[in-house]
Amino acid sequence: MSELLRALNNTRTLRAQARELQLLELEEISFKLTTLIAERREEHSVIEAATRAKEEKLAKYRNLLLKEGIEPNELLGPLTSSGKMLSKRALRPAKYKYIQNGQVRSWTGRGRKPSVIKIALANGKSLDDFLI
Image (cartoon, rainbow, N blue to C red; front, side, top):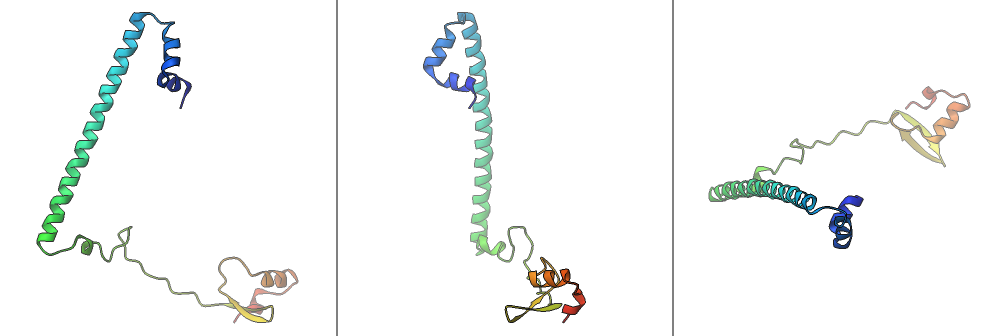
């Protein structure tokens, strides 16, 4: 919160600051604040009215669905949050084989290179040496 808002929110500080102002200036500030408050109330009432109207529409359609024997959740059953069907990607087949700690392991060629392959490449081996 800014210093000005802190001062406006604190009665003591506000009194101390108001002592330096003339009555006419205080009344002008009061008028402007009253106007701002009225505008904010109007905005708030418009938002509340829109929210109420939306809730009434939702209730209306929910009741229509239930009257027809349809659960609202059934409409969105197979959909995800993005509106698309989820499909699992097939696993990629391994392209390379290497031995690490006495175990045979494989690598698809995507992602980070295994450290064993990195070391072998640094020592002059080719990636083709690891092909399956």
